[in-house]
Length: 66
Image 1: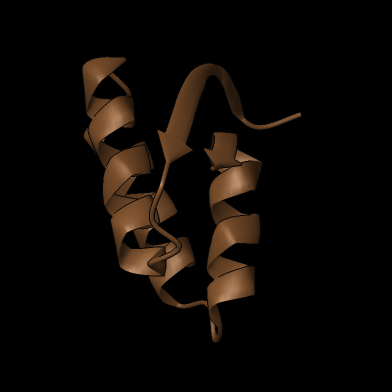
Image 2: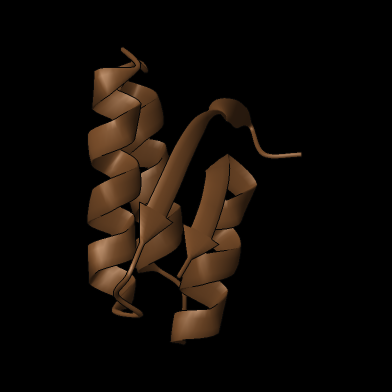
Protein backbone atom coordinates (compact mmCIF):
# COMPACT_ATOMS: atom_id res chain seq x y z
CA UNK A 1 0.00 0.00 0.00
CA UNK A 2 1.37 3.43 -0.86
CA UNK A 3 2.26 5.99 1.76
CA UNK A 4 -0.65 8.19 0.58
CA UNK A 5 -3.37 5.74 -0.52
CA UNK A 6 -5.92 8.54 -0.95
CA UNK A 7 -3.80 10.09 -3.74
CA UNK A 8 -4.67 8.58 -7.12
CA UNK A 9 -2.78 9.42 -10.31
CA UNK A 10 -3.93 8.25 -13.76
CA UNK A 11 -1.59 9.14 -16.56
CA UNK A 12 -1.60 8.39 -20.28
CA UNK A 13 2.07 9.23 -20.70
CA UNK A 14 4.90 6.82 -19.95
CA UNK A 15 7.28 9.74 -19.46
CA UNK A 16 8.78 9.39 -15.96
CA UNK A 17 9.07 13.16 -15.48
CA UNK A 18 5.38 13.59 -16.30
CA UNK A 19 4.57 10.94 -13.70
CA UNK A 20 6.66 12.64 -11.01
CA UNK A 21 5.02 15.96 -11.86
CA UNK A 22 1.52 14.46 -11.67
CA UNK A 23 2.21 12.86 -8.29
CA UNK A 24 3.63 16.15 -6.98
CA UNK A 25 0.56 18.05 -8.19
CA UNK A 26 -1.80 15.60 -6.47
CA UNK A 27 0.26 15.77 -3.29
CA UNK A 28 -0.11 19.56 -3.28
CA UNK A 29 -3.87 19.25 -3.87
CA UNK A 30 -4.07 16.92 -0.86
CA UNK A 31 -2.13 19.43 1.28
CA UNK A 32 0.84 17.14 1.85
CA UNK A 33 3.62 18.88 3.73
CA UNK A 34 6.11 20.51 1.34
CA UNK A 35 8.97 18.70 3.09
CA UNK A 36 7.31 15.36 2.24
CA UNK A 37 6.82 16.47 -1.37
CA UNK A 38 10.50 17.35 -1.58
CA UNK A 39 11.43 13.99 -0.04
CA UNK A 40 9.32 12.21 -2.67
CA UNK A 41 10.81 14.30 -5.48
CA UNK A 42 14.38 13.63 -4.38
CA UNK A 43 13.74 9.91 -4.15
CA UNK A 44 11.98 9.74 -7.53
CA UNK A 45 14.54 11.86 -9.35
CA UNK A 46 17.43 9.80 -8.01
CA UNK A 47 16.04 6.67 -9.68
CA UNK A 48 18.22 5.29 -12.45
CA UNK A 49 15.61 4.12 -14.96
CA UNK A 50 11.94 4.78 -15.83
CA UNK A 51 10.74 1.55 -14.20
CA UNK A 52 12.40 2.54 -10.94
CA UNK A 53 10.75 5.99 -11.13
CA UNK A 54 7.34 4.29 -11.52
CA UNK A 55 8.12 2.05 -8.54
CA UNK A 56 9.03 5.04 -6.37
CA UNK A 57 5.83 6.84 -7.41
CA UNK A 58 3.80 3.73 -6.57
CA UNK A 59 5.35 3.68 -3.10
CA UNK A 60 3.97 7.17 -2.47
CA UNK A 61 0.61 7.20 -4.32
CA UNK A 62 -1.77 4.97 -6.23
CA UNK A 63 -0.54 5.11 -9.82
CA UNK A 64 -2.31 3.90 -12.96
CA UNK A 65 -0.64 4.22 -16.34
CA UNK A 66 -3.26 3.82 -19.04
